[in-house]
Length: 363
Image (cartoon, rainbow, N blue to C red; front, side, top):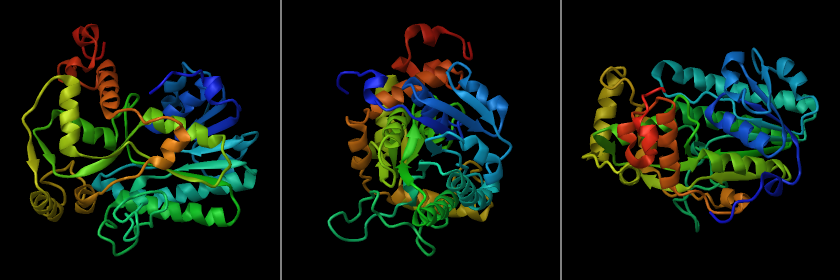
Protein backbone atom coordinates (compact mmCIF):
# COMPACT_ATOMS: atom_id res chain seq x y z
CA UNK A 1 0.00 0.00 0.00
CA UNK A 2 2.99 2.28 0.03
CA UNK A 3 4.43 4.41 2.81
CA UNK A 4 1.97 5.33 5.55
CA UNK A 5 1.17 9.00 6.04
CA UNK A 6 -0.03 10.88 9.07
CA UNK A 7 -3.74 11.65 9.31
CA UNK A 8 -3.07 15.39 9.27
CA UNK A 9 -1.14 14.96 6.01
CA UNK A 10 -3.93 12.91 4.40
CA UNK A 11 -6.66 15.31 5.51
CA UNK A 12 -5.13 18.81 5.70
CA UNK A 13 -8.51 20.59 6.01
CA UNK A 14 -10.35 19.86 9.23
CA UNK A 15 -14.14 19.87 9.07
CA UNK A 16 -17.10 19.37 11.41
CA UNK A 17 -18.79 16.07 10.55
CA UNK A 18 -22.06 14.53 11.68
CA UNK A 19 -22.49 10.79 11.07
CA UNK A 20 -25.93 9.18 11.17
CA UNK A 21 -26.07 5.46 11.93
CA UNK A 22 -22.82 5.86 13.87
CA UNK A 23 -23.35 2.70 15.92
CA UNK A 24 -23.49 0.58 12.77
CA UNK A 25 -20.56 -1.10 11.03
CA UNK A 26 -19.92 1.57 8.40
CA UNK A 27 -21.00 4.52 10.56
CA UNK A 28 -18.68 3.56 13.41
CA UNK A 29 -15.76 3.12 11.00
CA UNK A 30 -16.39 6.56 9.48
CA UNK A 31 -16.76 8.27 12.86
CA UNK A 32 -13.56 6.69 14.20
CA UNK A 33 -11.56 7.47 11.08
CA UNK A 34 -12.80 11.07 11.10
CA UNK A 35 -11.86 11.56 14.74
CA UNK A 36 -8.44 10.00 14.14
CA UNK A 37 -7.92 12.48 11.30
CA UNK A 38 -8.60 15.38 13.66
CA UNK A 39 -12.09 16.27 12.46
CA UNK A 40 -14.74 17.35 14.98
CA UNK A 41 -17.18 14.44 14.94
CA UNK A 42 -20.77 14.24 16.13
CA UNK A 43 -22.04 10.66 16.14
CA UNK A 44 -25.80 10.09 15.96
CA UNK A 45 -27.73 6.91 16.65
CA UNK A 46 -31.17 6.09 17.98
CA UNK A 47 -29.91 4.37 21.13
CA UNK A 48 -27.55 5.90 23.66
CA UNK A 49 -26.50 2.43 24.74
CA UNK A 50 -25.33 1.48 21.25
CA UNK A 51 -23.19 4.63 21.02
CA UNK A 52 -21.04 3.40 23.92
CA UNK A 53 -18.92 1.55 21.35
CA UNK A 54 -17.42 5.00 20.68
CA UNK A 55 -16.61 5.81 24.32
CA UNK A 56 -12.88 5.38 23.71
CA UNK A 57 -12.77 7.98 20.91
CA UNK A 58 -12.95 11.81 21.07
CA UNK A 59 -16.42 11.87 19.53
CA UNK A 60 -19.54 13.75 20.61
CA UNK A 61 -22.34 11.21 21.05
CA UNK A 62 -25.92 12.17 20.39
CA UNK A 63 -28.82 9.75 20.81
CA UNK A 64 -31.92 10.85 18.89
CA UNK A 65 -35.29 9.11 19.04
CA UNK A 66 -35.70 9.50 15.28
CA UNK A 67 -34.15 11.25 12.29
CA UNK A 68 -37.17 13.34 11.37
CA UNK A 69 -36.34 16.88 10.22
CA UNK A 70 -37.59 18.39 13.48
CA UNK A 71 -35.35 16.12 15.56
CA UNK A 72 -32.23 16.11 13.37
CA UNK A 73 -32.16 19.78 12.35
CA UNK A 74 -30.79 21.13 15.68
CA UNK A 75 -28.02 18.50 15.62
CA UNK A 76 -26.82 19.89 12.27
CA UNK A 77 -26.07 23.32 13.73
CA UNK A 78 -22.44 24.18 13.01
CA UNK A 79 -21.89 21.04 10.92
CA UNK A 80 -19.97 21.26 7.62
CA UNK A 81 -20.52 17.70 6.34
CA UNK A 82 -23.34 15.25 7.00
CA UNK A 83 -22.47 11.59 6.31
CA UNK A 84 -25.72 9.63 6.08
CA UNK A 85 -24.97 6.00 6.98
CA UNK A 86 -28.25 5.12 8.69
CA UNK A 87 -30.31 2.54 6.79
CA UNK A 88 -31.96 -0.82 7.18
CA UNK A 89 -29.74 -3.52 5.66
CA UNK A 90 -31.94 -6.56 6.10
CA UNK A 91 -33.02 -9.59 4.11
CA UNK A 92 -35.18 -11.31 6.71
CA UNK A 93 -38.61 -12.03 5.27
CA UNK A 94 -40.40 -10.34 8.13
CA UNK A 95 -38.36 -7.13 7.84
CA UNK A 96 -37.88 -6.84 4.08
CA UNK A 97 -40.99 -4.85 3.22
CA UNK A 98 -40.36 -2.56 6.17
CA UNK A 99 -36.97 -1.68 4.67
CA UNK A 100 -38.59 -0.94 1.30
CA UNK A 101 -40.85 1.53 3.08
CA UNK A 102 -38.43 2.97 5.63
CA UNK A 103 -35.17 3.52 3.72
CA UNK A 104 -36.61 6.06 1.23
CA UNK A 105 -38.48 7.84 4.03
CA UNK A 106 -35.31 7.99 6.11
CA UNK A 107 -33.38 9.53 3.20
CA UNK A 108 -36.15 12.07 2.68
CA UNK A 109 -36.16 13.08 6.34
CA UNK A 110 -32.38 13.40 6.61
CA UNK A 111 -32.02 15.42 3.41
CA UNK A 112 -34.94 17.64 4.39
CA UNK A 113 -33.17 18.41 7.68
CA UNK A 114 -29.92 19.12 5.80
CA UNK A 115 -31.72 21.41 3.37
CA UNK A 116 -33.42 23.30 6.21
CA UNK A 117 -30.14 23.63 8.12
CA UNK A 118 -28.19 24.78 5.07
CA UNK A 119 -25.65 21.97 5.43
CA UNK A 120 -22.77 22.58 3.01
CA UNK A 121 -22.19 18.97 1.97
CA UNK A 122 -24.21 15.77 2.37
CA UNK A 123 -22.56 12.43 1.65
CA UNK A 124 -25.22 9.79 1.09
CA UNK A 125 -24.04 6.21 1.52
CA UNK A 126 -26.07 4.33 -1.06
CA UNK A 127 -25.17 0.86 -2.36
CA UNK A 128 -23.76 -0.60 -5.55
CA UNK A 129 -26.84 -2.82 -5.75
CA UNK A 130 -28.82 0.11 -7.20
CA UNK A 131 -26.57 0.14 -10.28
CA UNK A 132 -27.49 -1.92 -13.32
CA UNK A 133 -24.68 -3.07 -15.64
CA UNK A 134 -24.37 -0.99 -18.78
CA UNK A 135 -26.59 -2.61 -21.43
CA UNK A 136 -24.42 -1.45 -24.34
CA UNK A 137 -21.48 0.75 -25.28
CA UNK A 138 -17.80 0.38 -24.35
CA UNK A 139 -18.62 -0.57 -20.74
CA UNK A 140 -21.26 -3.17 -21.61
CA UNK A 141 -21.85 -5.55 -18.70
CA UNK A 142 -19.87 -3.39 -16.26
CA UNK A 143 -21.25 -1.59 -13.20
CA UNK A 144 -19.88 1.89 -12.48
CA UNK A 145 -21.25 5.17 -11.02
CA UNK A 146 -22.70 6.12 -14.41
CA UNK A 147 -24.70 2.90 -14.74
CA UNK A 148 -28.50 3.06 -15.02
CA UNK A 149 -30.57 2.02 -12.02
CA UNK A 150 -32.69 -1.10 -11.67
CA UNK A 151 -36.38 -0.47 -12.28
CA UNK A 152 -39.74 -2.26 -11.95
CA UNK A 153 -39.85 -5.21 -14.33
CA UNK A 154 -36.10 -5.87 -14.12
CA UNK A 155 -35.14 -9.35 -12.90
CA UNK A 156 -33.67 -8.14 -9.58
CA UNK A 157 -36.50 -5.77 -8.63
CA UNK A 158 -37.86 -8.45 -6.30
CA UNK A 159 -34.80 -8.01 -4.06
CA UNK A 160 -36.24 -5.90 -1.21
CA UNK A 161 -32.97 -4.29 -0.17
CA UNK A 162 -32.11 -3.41 -3.79
CA UNK A 163 -35.58 -1.95 -4.28
CA UNK A 164 -35.36 0.10 -1.08
CA UNK A 165 -31.99 1.59 -2.06
CA UNK A 166 -33.15 2.44 -5.59
CA UNK A 167 -36.15 4.26 -4.15
CA UNK A 168 -33.92 6.07 -1.64
CA UNK A 169 -31.59 7.03 -4.49
CA UNK A 170 -34.51 8.57 -6.35
CA UNK A 171 -35.26 10.66 -3.27
CA UNK A 172 -31.63 11.84 -3.09
CA UNK A 173 -31.62 12.74 -6.79
CA UNK A 174 -34.76 14.84 -6.28
CA UNK A 175 -32.93 16.81 -3.58
CA UNK A 176 -29.96 17.27 -5.92
CA UNK A 177 -32.30 18.88 -8.42
CA UNK A 178 -33.48 21.24 -5.68
CA UNK A 179 -29.88 22.33 -5.15
CA UNK A 180 -29.00 20.32 -2.04
CA UNK A 181 -25.22 19.59 -2.23
CA UNK A 182 -25.28 15.77 -2.27
CA UNK A 183 -22.44 13.40 -3.05
CA UNK A 184 -23.26 9.70 -3.40
CA UNK A 185 -21.06 6.74 -2.55
CA UNK A 186 -21.89 3.24 -3.78
CA UNK A 187 -20.02 0.56 -1.82
CA UNK A 188 -20.19 -3.11 -2.71
CA UNK A 189 -20.41 -5.71 0.09
CA UNK A 190 -18.51 -4.20 3.04
CA UNK A 191 -16.40 -6.46 5.24
CA UNK A 192 -13.39 -6.20 7.53
CA UNK A 193 -12.60 -5.50 11.19
CA UNK A 194 -15.22 -3.76 13.31
CA UNK A 195 -18.25 -5.77 12.18
CA UNK A 196 -19.92 -6.36 15.54
CA UNK A 197 -23.02 -8.28 14.48
CA UNK A 198 -21.96 -9.46 11.79
CA UNK A 199 -24.37 -8.03 9.23
CA UNK A 200 -25.52 -9.38 5.88
CA UNK A 201 -22.17 -9.00 4.10
CA UNK A 202 -20.28 -10.42 7.06
CA UNK A 203 -22.82 -13.22 7.22
CA UNK A 204 -22.01 -14.20 3.64
CA UNK A 205 -18.34 -14.26 4.55
CA UNK A 206 -18.84 -16.37 7.65
CA UNK A 207 -21.00 -18.82 5.70
CA UNK A 208 -18.26 -19.18 3.10
CA UNK A 209 -15.62 -19.67 5.80
CA UNK A 210 -17.50 -22.24 7.86
CA UNK A 211 -19.93 -23.82 5.39
CA UNK A 212 -19.67 -26.94 3.29
CA UNK A 213 -21.11 -25.36 0.15
CA UNK A 214 -20.95 -22.12 -1.81
CA UNK A 215 -23.21 -20.92 -4.59
CA UNK A 216 -21.70 -20.40 -8.02
CA UNK A 217 -22.22 -16.67 -7.75
CA UNK A 218 -20.27 -13.49 -7.07
CA UNK A 219 -20.32 -10.21 -5.18
CA UNK A 220 -18.31 -7.02 -5.25
CA UNK A 221 -16.26 -6.58 -2.07
CA UNK A 222 -15.10 -3.52 -0.13
CA UNK A 223 -12.81 -3.14 2.90
CA UNK A 224 -14.56 -0.96 5.48
CA UNK A 225 -11.34 0.97 6.14
CA UNK A 226 -10.95 1.88 2.47
CA UNK A 227 -14.59 2.96 2.39
CA UNK A 228 -14.14 5.20 5.45
CA UNK A 229 -11.07 6.81 3.91
CA UNK A 230 -12.86 7.46 0.62
CA UNK A 231 -15.73 9.10 2.52
CA UNK A 232 -13.32 11.41 4.37
CA UNK A 233 -11.61 12.40 1.14
CA UNK A 234 -14.97 13.09 -0.49
CA UNK A 235 -15.83 15.26 2.54
CA UNK A 236 -13.03 17.59 1.50
CA UNK A 237 -13.98 17.60 -2.19
CA UNK A 238 -16.65 19.75 -3.84
CA UNK A 239 -20.10 18.16 -3.45
CA UNK A 240 -22.02 16.51 -6.25
CA UNK A 241 -19.82 13.56 -7.17
CA UNK A 242 -20.71 9.87 -7.46
CA UNK A 243 -18.21 7.19 -6.46
CA UNK A 244 -18.27 3.40 -6.56
CA UNK A 245 -16.02 1.83 -3.93
CA UNK A 246 -15.04 -1.77 -4.61
CA UNK A 247 -12.02 -4.01 -4.67
CA UNK A 248 -13.88 -5.68 -7.54
CA UNK A 249 -16.17 -8.60 -8.19
CA UNK A 250 -14.97 -11.96 -6.86
CA UNK A 251 -16.73 -15.28 -7.20
CA UNK A 252 -17.75 -17.06 -4.01
CA UNK A 253 -15.45 -19.98 -4.80
CA UNK A 254 -12.56 -17.48 -5.09
CA UNK A 255 -13.43 -15.98 -1.70
CA UNK A 256 -13.44 -19.50 -0.27
CA UNK A 257 -9.94 -20.12 -1.64
CA UNK A 258 -8.68 -16.83 -0.17
CA UNK A 259 -10.27 -17.65 3.18
CA UNK A 260 -8.58 -21.05 3.18
CA UNK A 261 -5.25 -19.46 2.33
CA UNK A 262 -5.60 -16.88 5.10
CA UNK A 263 -6.61 -19.40 7.75
CA UNK A 264 -4.43 -22.26 6.57
CA UNK A 265 -7.45 -24.54 6.98
CA UNK A 266 -8.73 -26.10 3.78
CA UNK A 267 -12.38 -27.16 3.76
CA UNK A 268 -14.08 -29.42 1.28
CA UNK A 269 -16.94 -27.47 -0.29
CA UNK A 270 -19.54 -28.23 -2.90
CA UNK A 271 -20.09 -25.48 -5.46
CA UNK A 272 -23.83 -25.26 -6.09
CA UNK A 273 -24.51 -24.48 -9.78
CA UNK A 274 -26.96 -21.74 -10.68
CA UNK A 275 -29.83 -24.07 -11.76
CA UNK A 276 -29.71 -25.87 -8.40
CA UNK A 277 -29.65 -22.58 -6.47
CA UNK A 278 -32.60 -21.26 -8.45
CA UNK A 279 -34.63 -24.43 -7.94
CA UNK A 280 -34.04 -24.54 -4.18
CA UNK A 281 -34.72 -20.82 -3.88
CA UNK A 282 -38.08 -21.22 -5.61
CA UNK A 283 -39.03 -24.13 -3.34
CA UNK A 284 -37.97 -22.15 -0.29
CA UNK A 285 -40.01 -19.19 -1.45
CA UNK A 286 -43.10 -21.32 -2.02
CA UNK A 287 -42.65 -22.71 1.50
CA UNK A 288 -42.48 -19.21 2.95
CA UNK A 289 -38.80 -19.57 3.79
CA UNK A 290 -39.29 -22.60 6.03
CA UNK A 291 -36.85 -24.84 4.12
CA UNK A 292 -33.91 -22.44 4.55
CA UNK A 293 -35.01 -19.64 6.92
CA UNK A 294 -31.76 -17.70 6.59
CA UNK A 295 -31.64 -17.76 2.78
CA UNK A 296 -32.32 -14.52 0.89
CA UNK A 297 -35.25 -14.32 -1.55
CA UNK A 298 -34.80 -15.63 -5.12
CA UNK A 299 -34.24 -12.16 -6.62
CA UNK A 300 -31.38 -11.55 -4.18
CA UNK A 301 -29.74 -14.84 -5.11
CA UNK A 302 -30.26 -14.05 -8.78
CA UNK A 303 -28.26 -10.85 -8.30
CA UNK A 304 -25.34 -12.89 -6.98
CA UNK A 305 -25.65 -15.48 -9.73
CA UNK A 306 -25.48 -12.92 -12.55
CA UNK A 307 -23.29 -10.09 -11.24
CA UNK A 308 -20.59 -8.99 -13.68
CA UNK A 309 -17.54 -6.73 -13.16
CA UNK A 310 -17.75 -3.78 -10.78
CA UNK A 311 -15.54 -0.82 -11.65
CA UNK A 312 -14.25 0.76 -8.43
CA UNK A 313 -11.80 3.11 -10.17
CA UNK A 314 -13.80 6.21 -9.18
CA UNK A 315 -13.35 5.40 -5.51
CA UNK A 316 -9.73 4.33 -5.98
CA UNK A 317 -8.93 7.66 -7.64
CA UNK A 318 -10.29 9.51 -4.60
CA UNK A 319 -8.41 7.15 -2.28
CA UNK A 320 -5.14 7.96 -3.99
CA UNK A 321 -3.66 4.49 -3.58
CA UNK A 322 -4.70 0.89 -4.32
CA UNK A 323 -7.43 -0.79 -2.33
CA UNK A 324 -6.36 -3.32 0.27
CA UNK A 325 -5.93 -6.87 -0.92
CA UNK A 326 -8.85 -9.12 -0.02
CA UNK A 327 -6.48 -11.44 1.83
CA UNK A 328 -5.63 -8.58 4.22
CA UNK A 329 -9.30 -7.69 4.64
CA UNK A 330 -10.28 -11.27 5.43
CA UNK A 331 -7.33 -11.86 7.77
CA UNK A 332 -8.03 -8.71 9.79
CA UNK A 333 -11.76 -9.36 9.79
CA UNK A 334 -11.35 -12.92 11.07
CA UNK A 335 -8.93 -11.74 13.77
CA UNK A 336 -11.47 -9.10 14.85
CA UNK A 337 -14.24 -11.69 15.12
CA UNK A 338 -12.05 -13.96 17.23
CA UNK A 339 -11.15 -11.08 19.57
CA UNK A 340 -14.86 -10.29 19.98
CA UNK A 341 -15.86 -13.91 20.58
CA UNK A 342 -17.75 -14.08 17.28
CA UNK A 343 -15.57 -16.74 15.66
CA UNK A 344 -13.78 -19.77 17.04
CA UNK A 345 -10.02 -19.24 16.99
CA UNK A 346 -9.50 -22.72 15.54
CA UNK A 347 -11.68 -21.80 12.56
CA UNK A 348 -9.68 -18.59 12.02
CA UNK A 349 -6.45 -20.61 12.09
CA UNK A 350 -3.34 -18.64 11.31
CA UNK A 351 -5.36 -15.48 10.68
CA UNK A 352 -4.85 -14.68 14.38
CA UNK A 353 -1.69 -14.58 16.53
CA UNK A 354 -0.93 -17.67 18.59
CA UNK A 355 -1.68 -15.92 21.89
CA UNK A 356 -5.11 -14.90 20.63
CA UNK A 357 -5.82 -18.43 19.42
CA UNK A 358 -5.03 -19.76 22.93
CA UNK A 359 -7.32 -17.25 24.65
CA UNK A 360 -10.84 -18.40 25.62
CA UNK A 361 -13.68 -17.27 23.36
CA UNK A 362 -14.99 -13.95 24.62
CA UNK A 363 -11.90 -13.43 26.79
